[in-house]
Length: 174
Image 1 (cartoon, rainbow, N blue to C red):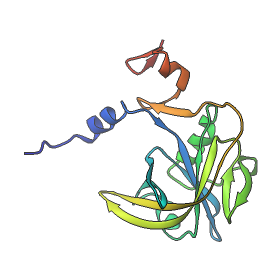
Image 2: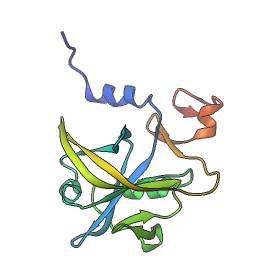
Image 3: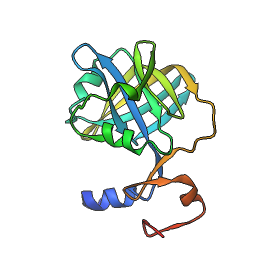
Image 4: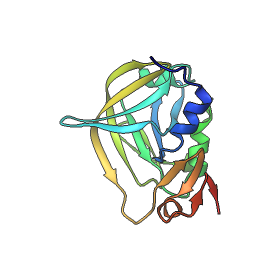
């Protein structure tokens, strides 16, 4: 017998799982360059190389992502909280031109990230109130340098170092 799950409690418990932060970007004629922040990203398969992200079916950009020929998953670095917050807005707000690097394969790439993967759409599946977008990786790039990733834990952006050395307790900084 299954218990009725309270959505607030569900979010709180899942907040115990530390995630990296990524922004999925694409472009079309109507919107130009667009993107959204996701933490529901994972690899799916090595052969073929597949990844996925999830998107609320009521999201403003849902239809746009269903119609693209390619998209890029950009992995954010520590210090890119502002970029994440910009693309986490529920409405499409065009990004300033200084956020973009030269695109790849017809898709926009964000500046200053840890790296990115370029995907062509592979499949879209229903997943409750979300769609699961599966992409086949057709190009990828890891940027040089030793930047740390932007992490998300207990509903807040975090420094990976602070998480690793246990400087955080009860979801608050010491």
